[in-house]
Image (cartoon, rainbow, N blue to C red; front, side, top):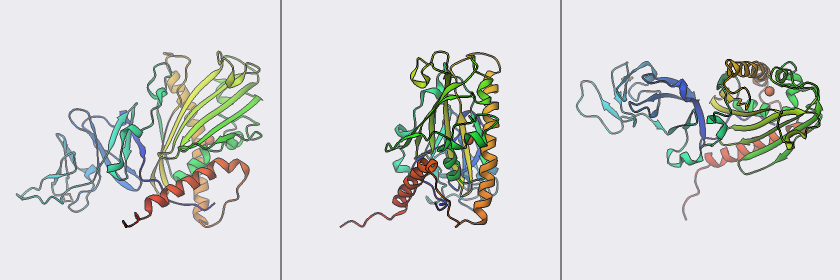
Length: 351
Ligand code: FES
Ligand SMILES: [Fe+2]
């Protein structure tokens, strides 16, 4: 497997948790190598503009909001939410070419989604709809990590849970989770993974939340959407012999899981996640307790993946050796490459 530092342009990517972008603030982040500012107009609607003034390329994030417009604080050019330049101090005429790029951005289910590709192809109907992101019966607190690693190495990690007994020995790992290979399906959107392990110890993290003791039947079911790098999961552990995921699930420890990875640059990425649960509704401090455990586990991934990135950088052309646990990630790498090649190929000339 060769390391391929490319990404799909035409997709909705998560830009931020919507609550990270308050009113009267310029929120700056880079997506797919492009610096962007996000802000809210007076009616609360999100706007996304390239964070680079068209005059001398100063960052607009160093500028200021004036009503719904942004003024560059280098020489004072002002831009409307459309990206159009609407004021050049000291000049009466403003050429139509004076503008900055505007990106489609949509707020949905507590998240801000951005489209960095061809704006004409952006259809908000295509944004993932996952009920657990805004269902009071499944509370959660959203998380975010910044990675000094390629988004592809992070995808590799989430598509292969055979790392759980090693990377996550003290948190979400289960000792024999690498003995069973998952069942894979290959829908058009990406991949469906069903990983079950019966008669296995409760993962250390789950001991803090389960109302039962002893061994369990554990499952990790998830869909991965290649456009946008979205993982939607159904994770749980049931008391041994209760039927596992196929049982009534009453009394089982259940979580849903959302992970989404947005490339920032070739070798950095944003990682947003949520881990909704259906127990302890309204219990004070439980949202924080769950996310603290998840942060602990995800820092274990981050540590090994960033160290892996450093080794890849030393020998970027060294091939990686595939094992059968790599089937899912290999499938997704090939799918990404196919889409990227199509996006980067010039359209066939009309006959
Ligand atoms: S660089 Fe923005 S006004 Fe000059
Ligand atoms: Fe992990």
